[in-house]
Image (cartoon, rainbow, N blue to C red; front, side, top):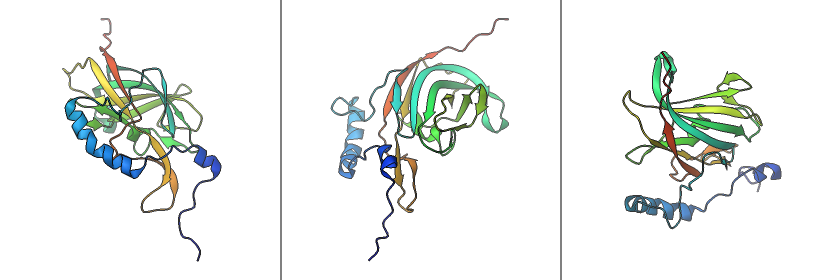
Length: 206
C-alpha cells in the first residue's frame, strides 16, 4: 500500500531545521511555567535564555542581532499620523530561500515585548531599511536594519524594556502536507530574552 504521509524535506533542507522538543517535555514545561513565573525565577531550566545586546541569535529562519531601544516618534500605520513608540533596533538576516515579510506572517510574528502584567505582545509595526532604501520584506541572504515598534503613551517613559525572540521551525502543518517555516505563537517558550535600557527621546534644538 502506498504511504500518504507527507514527504519530508531533502537532507539539505533538514540541515537547516532545528531539532524539535519532545511533546512530553513541552507538556511538563507548560505546567511548570506558571509556578516558576509566580515564584519569580527560572533558575532550574530557563525557557527564556537571556541574551546580550549585540550578540547574534539564530532563530532558524532568521539570524537576529538586537541593538538597542529608545523612545521615538514615527508615522503610524493606517495613516493615523505620528505617534510615540518604544523602538527596538535589530539587524536581521533571512536564512531561508524565499522572500519573507517583516510584518504580518513574517518577522513580526517572532518578536514580542513583555508588559508589566507579564504578557508577551507583538510589535504594533515593523519597518526595515536595506541598501539605503525602505523595505517591508527580507530577501534571502540580504541583511536588513529593522525597527520594531510598540506604541506608548505620551507620558510613558520606561527605563528598561524586555524583548523576546521566538524560534522558527521548518515543518508541515497539522492540516496540510506543505513544508514551510512556521513560528508557534501558542508555545510560551522563547529562543532569547533581552532587557534593554531605554534611551530618552531625542530633543531637537530650537
